[in-house]
Length: 118
Image (tube, rainbow, N blue to C red):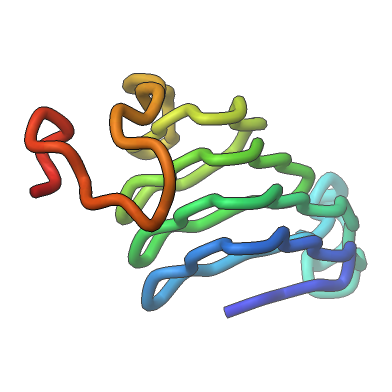
């Protein structure tokens, strides 16, 4: 689901798993005197750079920038920016590690056994 009132930019070669939700707008709710549904919206652009994988049912909240090559774990709720090549997971998400440098070079080559992908 995309809620793009504030704008969503998705880079090249990005993967979105099933059930991913990206929000670039949110309800205003600061006044107790006015019903929330009458308070309007806030808008913040979401930027997802190239070669990002957002796994199943992850939620990206308004104003977040996800750096190149990042991986977002399934079911994560991303509330803050994610560094390039970071792997994040959890609710709220936090960085659990960085993607390693490739040990097998180009896309035409087969993954090396030590990469755990063979």
